[in-house]
Image 1 (cartoon, one colour):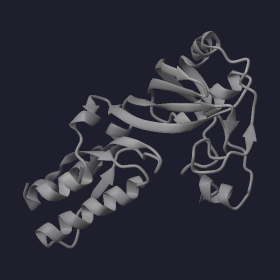
Image 2 (cartoon, one colour):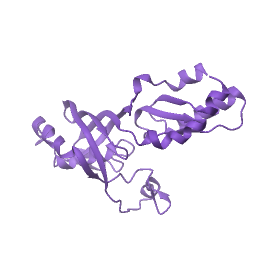
Image 3 (tube, one colour):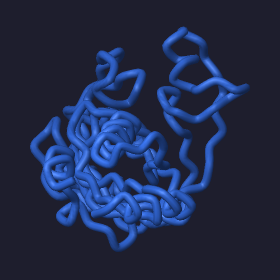
Image 4 (cartoon, helix red, strand yellow):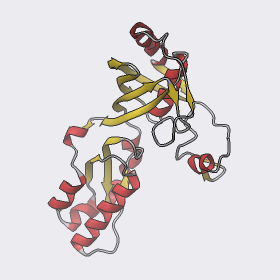
Length: 227
C-alpha cells in the first residue's frame, strides 16, 4: 500500500495480542506507517476498545476512514471466553485480585443453562467501575484506582445469543453476540450473582464485529512486515 492509500483511508483488521491496550496497537501502527513513508502526520484510530486482557478483533481505521469509526463501533459484536465461578474481583476480570469467594456446591449444569435465559434480549446492565467511561471528567478506572466509589447508572443493552460451550467447574466457556456498549465483564459478574454465587471473566476473545471476522485479521508483526 502507498502513502496515499493510508491517507485516503484503510480498514485494517488486527488480531490484538494479550496485554496490549487498544491505544498501544494504534500508536504502534501509526508509528510504523509514519516511518515507512517519512510522513509527520496520519490519522489512525480504532473502532471499539478491547481490554488489555482480551484478545481478538480490533478494527483500525486510517486517514479519511477514521470518519467511519462510529459506524463500525455501532455494529453487533461476537465474543468467546470463559467465566470462573465461585469468586469475584473488583475489575470483574483478572486485572485485579480476587476479593470475595462464594460457594459453588449448589451449581449444576442445569442451573447454568437455565440462568442463561435471564440474560437474553434487551436487559439492563451496569458497566464495571474499572472502565474507560467518564464521570465528572474522569475515567471510572481512575476513580476506582483511587479507591473512590461512584454510582454508575444501568443502561440498556441487547444480547442476541448467549451459548454455554463447555462446563468444567469452576470454568464455564461461552459465546455471546451482543450490541454496542455491552461489557462482558459485567455479564460475568451478573451471571455469578444470578447463580447465587460469584464469577469473574477469566478469558475473552472478540471474534466478530458486524461482518468482519478475527480469522481475516492480521497479527501486528505481520502488518509491520508487509508494510
